[in-house]
Length: 113
Image (cartoon, rainbow, N blue to C red; front, side):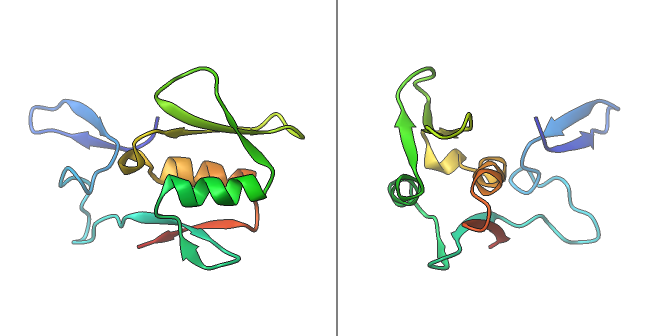
């Protein structure tokens, strides 16, 4: 779980996952920026799961059809790694992007939009 802890006027803390969407987390007039996943060899922004799946397949990742039906999952036969992504691309956030970057070094990069 990640996000920003926000103190409300009544003294209660609340964890806000995406503070920019909720108008929270502003400090010094700046807000957090939206992140994008970039495929470094082509310098293209990953804008759909079909594009991402094509890249992952070329890297040796295979779709895994087990477990949670609310997720797309990919695995490599040569490792124990598993990439899990929400089926709704609108929920594809920086946490999932960094997971892909860590498991595919020098192939992907997360940038501010």
